[in-house]
Image (cartoon, rainbow, N blue to C red):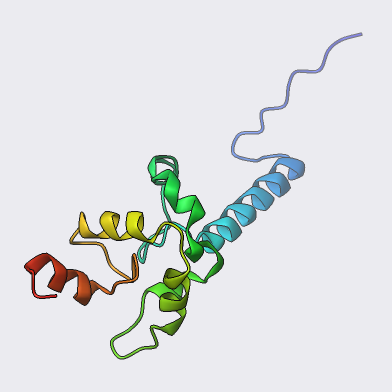
Length: 124
């Protein structure tokens, strides 16, 4: 028997690989949308971000609250963020983390961006 030469697929992928790739990309997008515990207001976190984030973040009460609750528009309702922070076991670690980064946006460690600015300047 003579062996047939392998077919050159070029840019075409077999349908099974295309379907698997599509499913993987869909899962990745769903996962990206569900990541709330890193609490970034910008693009989704990189793998480096996920692996280098402090361990205490896994224990934050914010893990159970949608991310937008911590990025409140001026005059918006801070109550959901306040409630989560009020019972959080890592609130002090979270506040220290936020105080160390003046560029950090959102509600962290029970404080707003404005409150942290005031704390840094000694006005609070």
